[in-house]
Amino acid sequence: MAETTVTSVIDSKTVLTHMDATNKDEALQELATALSNAGYLSDTESYIHDVYQREAEGSTGIGNYIAIPHGKSDGVSRIGVAIGILDHEIDWETIDDHGVKVIILFAVGSDTEGAKEHLKLVSLFARKLGRDSVIEALLKADDAEDVKAAFNN
Image (tube, rainbow, N blue to C red; front, top):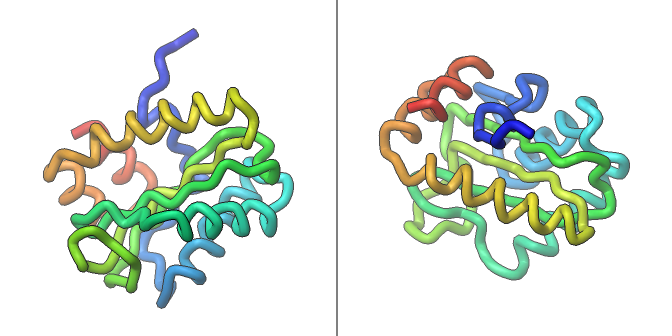
């Protein structure tokens, strides 16, 4: 099996750029809808509920305008990720007290396999998000190809 890379996980159908959501709820709903439309979710409502359950345990705003919300959920039919790029900052609980402009929403099942894949995905993305060049490119991304290119930085 080929090694999983960030760009191999990114599905152009679940990348939304120039989002105009005005708050966390709208942004999560838009991204979850994209995941659902692309066949990653079997139950969008229960998935969103599980994401909020996880948010209640601690903020997913990792600073530098990035949030990585996620929730292990029975509402996930296959593992995926939705990426949202906003043109403006929205309020989000973050470690650096800035808002968020880039949202990377993980969809993973609640079974053991899902948990293992989830950890792999988060660490793959976290390594990339630790680089300023990646974040700068993400903030300027106009489309899914730009987003993929940013993660190749």
